[in-house]
Image (cartoon, rainbow, N blue to C red; front, side):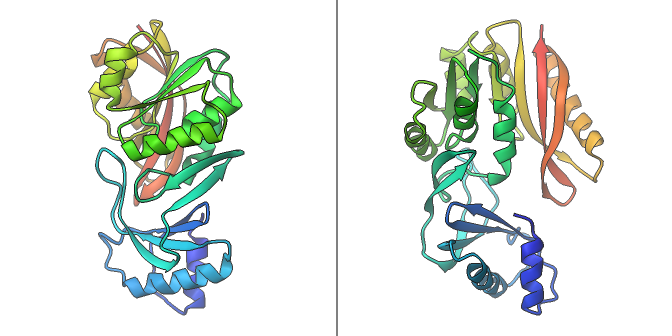
Length: 286
């Protein structure tokens, strides 16, 4: 949700301090996202914001503030409770799909909703897909619902996310289309999924070449499609950020013996001052 809501509430509260914050709505939980770990904001301000937010959105049962950035291989973060019920579990909906979510134990970003459906529309009939960092199943479930893949191997290293994803696959009646796997994607793909996939998703930024190597060796043909999500410096020049991100990926591919072409790129979202998440749709071949 746009930070315009935060600005409106601050004006209503007669608070002149500029607060860097935005709001994510996840089911009946609202998360106020603010870099409080590097900014010297007073907690009391966020409690007042939460009270006003609750009056505007009576359907929200619980409001939390991000206490830390996302950290660790399980991609979780800590939160501070601000208002309402102390609940972290909810059902989140997008594109007529439903997801059990625990915001404390699993990664979720409603801001990737458009990407979920965009990728789904690119998938061709009977493709085999590997999702290397699948979380609670956002990409995998939307793809399975809106396209016709042969199978999706949906991998995550977070056991809580994997258990939730299994429930979500059942909830959306997609057990015949999605196989959920727990573990390090590199190990699983090297051991069990070599020469398997037509399309690979890498929705985790800042990964090293070992993940790219696993993705490339999992392709069943000497060509295929990879969807890569990376962070890049961003000063408002979209093409510049996209091209810089792709050049880095291109070099990694070449070092692994693969050539590539950038089919499409876009800024997915800003993630901080002068920093954005970029998606690269890459066709690779050797």
